[in-house]
Length: 340
Image (cartoon, rainbow, N blue to C red):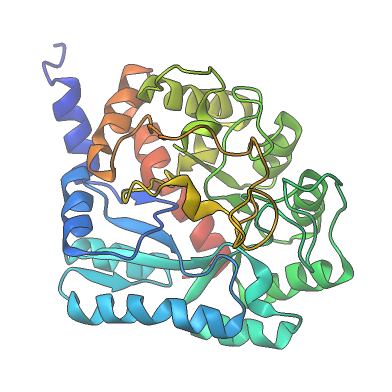
């Protein structure tokens, strides 16, 4: 007998039984944001606790997070393992994975990496658009690979069981990190360049290399990385096109969700250098890197996460494949890299 379950009910059932993970949720949590996560059925987030900071700056950025974790301890908990993620989900608390989007937190000293791990950080992105001591970012005019320091960092991250993130990282630096790493790597919030030709997105060759080593790509909802159609409001369908494309290219078990939503609707001047001009610097966005303001995301809010689940079902993904994309695929890599 054919099932009469609606797509909406099917999506709710899948999410009710799943770990639902956003692999990049940037803002420090507030009661309103906690409410939005619950409305969307999201159980776990990976959040950025450093972007351009050095080690001291990392500590300063962590301070408000520790206040949130203390104030809202019944609703939110820091997690550092898959076991803790599942335990938080069972207890009805939102699990928060700490990560950094730039290896500048290490300054020039790999001896800081164990201390960074002890602060609860489990994901380290190698570069943020521009060049650092590790290698080139995706916005550099050159395409140099890993430096000697970068090679040593990859090896030390493998030893300490920290997960390497290749979002924002240059093509050659990414390829060399994938080849060198003894563990899978991820791109927590990146898309397919074949669907949207932007330097922040990954080439087919890069996607295949990452997938061949067991990695996962979290699909980004930032409008400039979803569609290159000027003046056209983007939709969830445009977002899902990246999920389907990458899933067809490297396997549906290699795709996840990394929305990178700006729930605060931050104006573009917040992304400029201190002198007010676009370019490289503290906020390294070159002219043309960001789309015109205002930015209209295809997924408007984390509260709308179920639109993705319903959309995947409409695209013919099975229940198991959907559960993988919305969380379990990333958890597989987390467990392989972090251990139990």
